[in-house]
Length: 593
Image 1 (tube, rainbow, N blue to C red):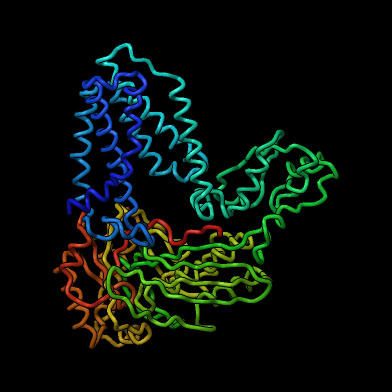
Image 2: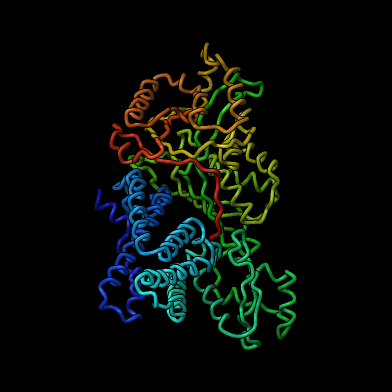
């Protein structure tokens, strides 16, 4: 475990902190053992601060790292280092840094802890801001150089901070940071941060334009989508010799700023060959979009009470929905006509789950049903090619099909710029399936009626859960029929409905919501013994408040806040597929390709 902790602290990155020796080096006092000792202590302090930030990063991004092809091998993500040990290790690291910084003087302490705060801000937000992320990295190197001088002042008061040291450090780090960003495959880091969809050749085209005099306001679609990382990018334009390179991407030529710019160019700006220079990449939506990627999240029913059958054949329900981090990915690309779907399965279970349940094809598939319903409601004539990466187990009560349908509606709306009012969007979703409205809304919600009448709830605190999915399945139709036949199946419906409505008026904790229970647990028939066995084995492993979600067969329970998942898995006896999830505030996430 010690080796795993050291690996998670990433000591190979500490070489950056050798910059703290710059003060001793340039003051020509390398032969002074006292100054070398202080510089060494400063190096240790900054290295431990860097290690602390790395550890906090790993704990905060634990779920995302487990899905990453490379980061999932890190100690925290792979389970070799329990999360609880990581949180405990933070305390001694920060205490050691505090003691060293006090010994080295208040000047050093202020710079060191400012560096720590800057890195936390970078990790939890600034790294997603275009250009700002590179400037923050450069400022971090400057702060190292300043700290290297500040730690000398208490014993060498005449030590001065050279402006040239700061200037050279800043611009050297800025150059390296920009070069690194430009070399990243597909400019993925900047695309995720807000330069939606820019490919390397597009970035190079902008870079080449920026070498000469003059200015252009670039407001093309790829830089002006929802992320809006660069709202107004100044681009120098030297005149007619760059005429064939000018202009924004398609769709922005009719904006006022673009019209004024084009009128001022030689020839009136009649042509716009830049997209052709960048290379055609297949059909696009009306705004030039090549496609969208949607993360469609699973749901849990924290509580589910079934009421009497209604005149329309459906049952009244009272349920508390919760979006969780387990998600399918739907990629949609424009096409001239019709809809097509390709499905591939990707394993997301911590263990087990090798066999994937079949996804319905043809008219029964909710992706295609949702696409046709959207086209019919909105009058959309164009089509789309869909690729579905399936991770949510099918037919287990986790709402995977409904999540995919909601993702389809969001994908087509984003792809073709169609805006629907909230009520119209939820009504369209309800026509596809009872759970689709929640899968469009997400977060935490009380569902009444068939589950389509939603009231948002405030989750008292985020939580983690463990989902176990057995090989057997529960057929929803026969389960409802068994509830109707069960003489005592509807006992207490009124009390459960009032409880759910009362919960809906206040913030809800998962433990309180679970008091609603799940009616389907009483009609499992021959599967009842298998359900009780699975619940017992989960509880023995340390999972609390275990219940079915939906009509089953997935069983979930709440994990203690800092319970190491590796320990829980080690204590679980069984072959069921296990998924660790956390509560989420939204059901879908939309990104451009």
